[in-house]
Length: 42
Image (cartoon, rainbow, N blue to C red; front, side, top):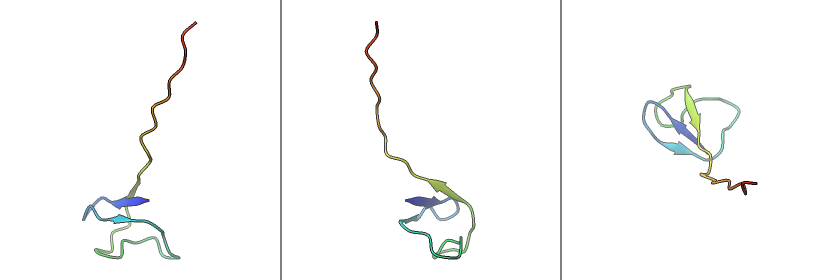
């Protein structure tokens, strides 16, 4: 999933063109799931 920087819309899949389908901007942020990794201390 990607989030457009200009209009803050979230798109799930990118087509052949790397542009926002709403505003035409080319800059995106890749949204990653918040995974909390726990490590046992020794």
